Image (cartoon, rainbow, N blue to C red; front, top):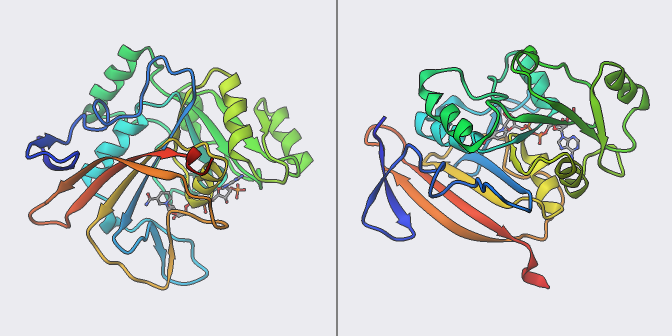
Length: 279
Ligand SMILES: NC(=O)c1ccc[n+]([C@@H]2O[C@H](COP(=O)([O-])OP(=O)(O)OC[C@H]3O[C@@H](n4cnc5c(N)ncnc54)[C@H](OP(=O)(O)O)[C@@H]3O)[C@@H](O)[C@H]2O)c1
């Protein structure tokens, strides 16, 4: 796929090739970082929808029309840079019922050989470790995790059900207590994982975990893709769920435009989150 994108920021008349855009120049990987780096990626319509549902009862889903080959390639390039993925109980349930596809590992396809090779060159294992954040602690493990030998940690809060914590521990899983209620908090989570020598965290979670991370000033890099569509709909999800935030200053690092002649256009943007603006 020799796809070229127009570089809008930093302003340039050059076109950039899509492949490797988020792996090299605009990636988030840092080989010898002393500080942990947390990166997240979201895809939305121009009216801000990341998922919609037909009615109040049904769970929301990412509309197929929003997805694109280009966005997925960039998602995988970001994924390839992680030593630890942060996901959650809801995703594990959706994965088990096949409502969502498996993104716990890079796909085992020829298109991803370059990403596996890149990981090997950096000294990263073929597959990152996993953290599953959950208050309910009610989710199944996916067989692919064992098949790919991925270390797994479960994270929950102090008020989570003690019997369920014990059950996971009896099954051989480590449960990290990283919050005062039954919910995980961002800083205790990243501190606990940093102690285990993870440094490069990629959030493959939804609006609640994004809020958890920003609220505790843990998110460093945010990648936002916008498909040039207006979806409407009464029942929808947006990128963030939760109380009003003290917003970090988002510094725009890059903005690319994919004009896609016969499809919807797309913006691919990346930001650094700065938290000390009010000090
Ligand atoms: N377009 C996109 O880029 C994009 C990205 C992500 C998601 N989505 C879509 O958006 C919709 C909503 O996303 P979602 O279901 O991933 O997200 P969500 O509603 O934000 O999170 C769901 C689950 O995450 C766990 N969780 C979240 N924050 C937690 C915390 N602080 N502590 C402990 N557990 C926590 C809980 O698991 P337990 O119930 O086990 O306690 C909760 O049920 C879905 O349709 C999804 O496919 C779209």
